[in-house]
Amino acid sequence: MKKIPDGTHSIYTIDCHYMAAGNACAYLLIENGRAVFIENNTVHAVPYLMRALRDHGISPDKVDLLIVTHLHLDHAGGTSALLRECPNATVLCHPKASRHIIDPSRLVKASIAVYGEDHFIKMYGQIMPVEASRVRSMGDGEMLDYGSRRFSFIHTAGHATHHFCIHDSGSNGIFTGDAFGLAYPVLQRGAAPFLFPTTAPSEFDLEEARRSVENIMATGAGHAYLTHFGAYPDIRDGALQMTDAFDRIAGIAEDASAAGITGDALEEFCRDRFLEFFDNRIRERGLVLSSEEREILDVDIRLNGRGIAQYIEKRRGGAQ
Image (cartoon, rainbow, N blue to C red; front, side):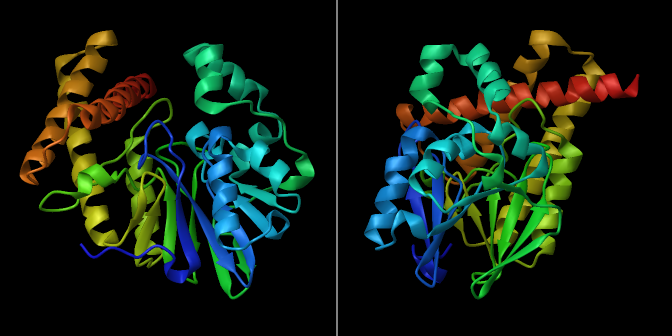
């Protein structure tokens, strides 16, 4: 698969070094000497983003937009810190995300309950409120002209209800957040590239996730800009891989329901079955992963198992 060189269409990939190199990125888009960030990762990533500005000769006051695909903290956690550095920037986000960016207290409290305060600060840093005047919600199908480009915003639930993707006419590329899967660099070394969906809790919905991929493809984009990780040039291949994985997840759900598996056993069942799918795709590509690489990927696999289990339980509840 032919790679897209960094800087093509004046779009630059910034490794945010979240957990490890090559795990999560942000994008810097330059237009007529002004700039847009798409995604911002965490507070700890802001120095990398500011360095990218300096490297391209852009002053922080020339950053106009900070676009976040959704609220998850590896995508939007650095928003308040980045805005302090970029005095003229406006945040663009999904309507369901805006109030949590303006007042992140509930989001922070919920995250601390999961991680503990010390680990939360280590992972994400101090997340502060944002002035409401600096936040703009983008509706489904809404468009925004930026220089010679047009950004089109497509709501893409499935991974999260507060998720959108952004089609950029200047590159005919689409920034997909987590709606078009994960394609870590370590997974591109085999006989064929490998991309798989993130079904992390708590809002994963299989039917919406399928619809999101269909809507991404309907834009006619020629390639996808993934947050995890980088430009994916063969968008049709990516869509086929996502569909293949969704079909597998549907099978997991059917088998779990038929067997009446619940509780912790359900999460374990979903994790093991998704791991089986993952390992089969790894073997098909002749990929050999180090123990360190495997350890990082196992985090995603465990989260996927939990998300699939929660999806199954919610679907059962809805059927009652």
